[in-house]
Length: 467
Figure 1: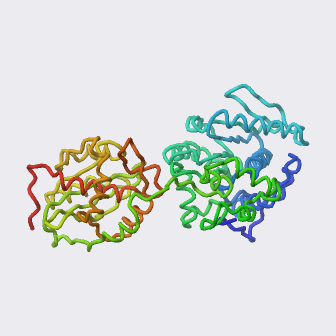
Figure 2: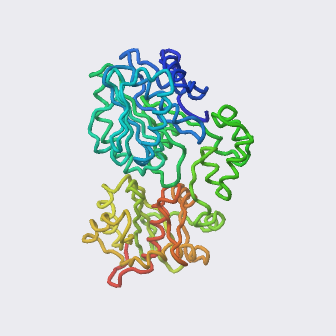
Figure 3: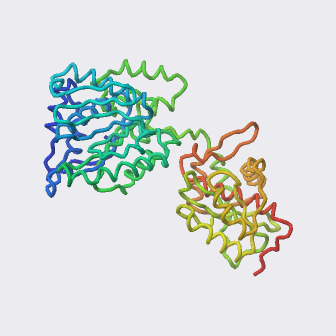
């Protein structure tokens, strides 16, 4: 395991009881699965029930994750009368296919004697046990409208969710689970499971990044399996060392076959068997050497000499708003990141303050995640008219300006990080920054693009700032 929650020896756990269910189900726990169950079922001495209310599992493919979910669902169903357990996958077909495999497994096991009935009608599948507990499959798209109280829910393949989609699901189900301890005596649990995703996996990426940074809720336990981030995923011996099921569910000759099946899609293989995020970032927009060669000193408010324009950009899902300034003088254009704000709520007041103080125009993308913010400030500040067709040129113009010595940028760690993690997407012969295809905040760099374009296209009625 390359990261995650360690067992607490001061707390007892129900791992042995869950392992007994696994054996009866015909899927004895692998060592990594037993480790997860021991930690996830630790008991809070104050309540006598689960200490953790959320379990996050990140694993490679072909490790037995689905079998582990089935074991815990079945064990959870045994903890009381009329418990409600839901398994949610990307689509209804995915969840129903998983459920049918679970049915086949349990009906061939010793546990079939505790099953009351299976309902297999499309859209209304469920397993009902003799104690009244049920396990039901569900598409993620239907979870938010479910509305019923749940004792356990699994969000499987969470990489498929954007942050907005994932947060919508959590907003719908978490409140229904919070009351279960008092009502039933058993703490409800939410499981979030997945292989690492792509740059588009903004929900699961955020979950993992927060946990890896040590900022997670103490009532969340997490488990992160895969090759070390700085290791070679093409080295099959490296995969064999770190994959939690290597040598138990399959062997190295099979791993070679798995690798060949991915062909030229090497990032796909690294994601599937190394559990490494596929960032899709094949090249930087601005080369490191060019970026390092075009630094300039930051400019203070009392040092401005020339025309000023502010560029404003908003990250995908409106998580951050970045404001940069471009200053045009006889020696060229210098750009400088001014601030990065959380969300967009404080942005209108700050943009108005800066624009009015420096009598400056503001340049923004007329579409995309910043469109509503642009509409909110357009009556209060002087906006540069940026046609959508010209938006495709702002990044290229900025890079060309750096290459020709016409544009420089003030040193800033946040801006440096944005440059290092921002990717581009092509439209014909033109390209633009890709917000979802990048691996970090794109708004700092994009705001510099916009500021530099805007300072060259300042409205003619604009009066330059004078100290």
